Image 1: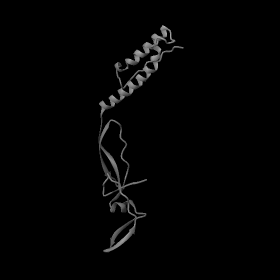
Image 2: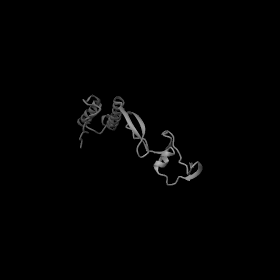
Image 3: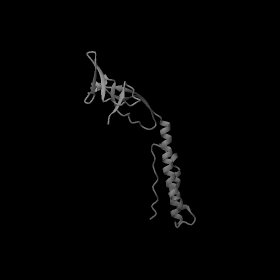
Image 4: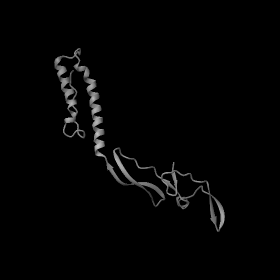
Length: 153
């Protein structure tokens, strides 16, 4: 479905009329608009508008709308700046949530009434400590080496 605007106002949608009043040889004439070409619609101030560009998260855009040779308005990016600090904070929060979930799943291994023997409990303690130490890894949060789950079979 096409999106139409009038007189270059890209913020507001327009409904194209079914008829237009024209002056031909100084006489009023009512013309049906069905079958009008883009060129004819452009002459009346109506243009098709493409949907806005998709935006990446954590990025601020400066854009402008440009009417192409085909009389269609398209959004063009003038500049784009990624907020690296906000992206890093989001990545850290996501990784910590994932890590915290893994820690919660293994809490049972450290309970005093656990069915695990002392050696197996020590393996799980090492795994939990490695999870807690994830933020101290070089390259965190971009490069994370997840610890292996202890093989206790």
